[in-house]
Figure 1 (spheres, helix red, strand yellow):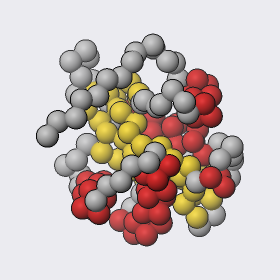
Figure 2 (tube, rainbow, N blue to C red):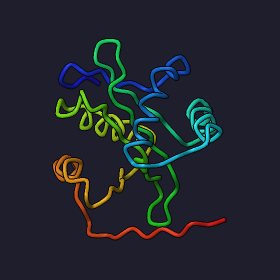
Figure 3 (tube, one colour):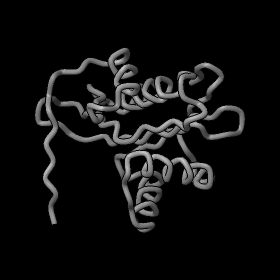
Figure 4 (cartoon, rainbow, N blue to C red):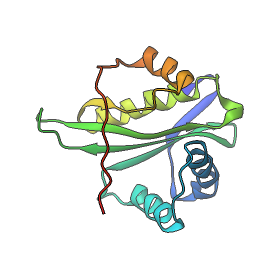
Length: 151
């Protein structure tokens, strides 16, 4: 898939060196700290065909400028599966060029091919720029997300 001079494709094992700095920038942007073991496990899951996860990369020339991770899962509300877009990040220099939109569309295509009936995600209410994009490509259904950490 191509958009605004950006090519979106599934990330391959050889892409880890390009992916990891964007992954870390995404974690920093969200003020999250993960141990390297979690990053290693995440990358390994993307490569494991038994895992219902996918990773997409947006490339401008030979530079990775955006990443998107998604998880397919069963649903109690339908026979088909659903797709949770878990992570979406565009490098600051590539923002405003359609990278986020291209990644969302590629995730929707991958999810649809896998039989998913819905693609959904969440974001923080204060992420105004991201929400402007999300409001163009999806519908906010009014749900509030609650989290409870488990040991």
